[in-house]
Amino acid sequence: MSQYLYTSFITLLTILLMLVLSFNVGRARGKYQVKAPAVSGHELFDRAYRVQLNTIENVLMFLPALWLYAVFLGDKGAGDSGVIWLIARVWYAVSYQLNPAKRGLGFLISILVIAGLWTGAAYGMFHQLMKGSI
Image (cartoon, rainbow, N blue to C red):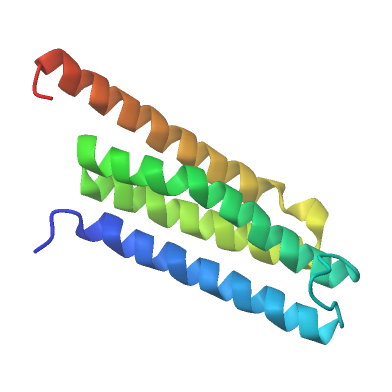
């Protein structure tokens, strides 16, 4: 069994989320007649596009922090945090599509998870350095 089973599973679910958001943008592009290469043109397309881009920006911080936390503190904690992050990002995406003013809590929770993962990873790395095991 893999040492990083939970973290690997969260990574696969994160990729799935990114695929769903990509398909959603493509669907919105067709439905609202926003021809490529345009990236705006109808408010509902713009929302779908912003959700995708903001999630890409978030993933760039999330995945490295997730894996560093898993390596230095543990797979289970990383997996648990990843579940919270995924729920927050889905919440953010749905909220943004329905009413952009309501997206804040999903965004905040996802950023707090990233901050927690980063802090945990930094602590774990520092702890390993102090033990002289790196």
